[in-house]
Image (tube, rainbow, N blue to C red):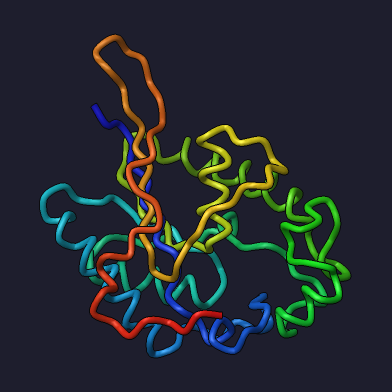
Length: 218
């Protein structure tokens, strides 16, 4: 028996993604035309199953690309959307708005390369972000026990969910691919003996994007 279901939809392509810029609060200007189309396709796919077994609510973080993605899904499914700062992405500090290539060169790699070292002045560390995001996501899961919940999320939030629910030690060198507007689903199961566990139903599912123009490879 599935008691709780969490569906993570990574936001559609944002202008900062297309421009190769670090998309912090100062820089994120929202989705590109392709990003809107991606979010709409994800919403339509969720709408099909919503008719059979409704979702209860959608959560979105504060950055514009998440808000726009979440609103598209909420309008399509006709369910309430909650804006929650606990779903915010990493703090980028002075890297906000700079080209990712330049930031990674200066830091000798991206955030994951040196997970206990900030990648820019005033930024998070990768492990510090994961620890904070795991606490926040754990709170949200407890608050929504027994519901079917959609999250319009950063890719980092998808990684956080896997780290938390799979019990992966923070600092692990392994990672996960997460494409724009992909769908990732976690289900909380309880068997006839009352035993429970989280099970990953799908990760980075992009079947609904097959008819759209593919994004260029970075």
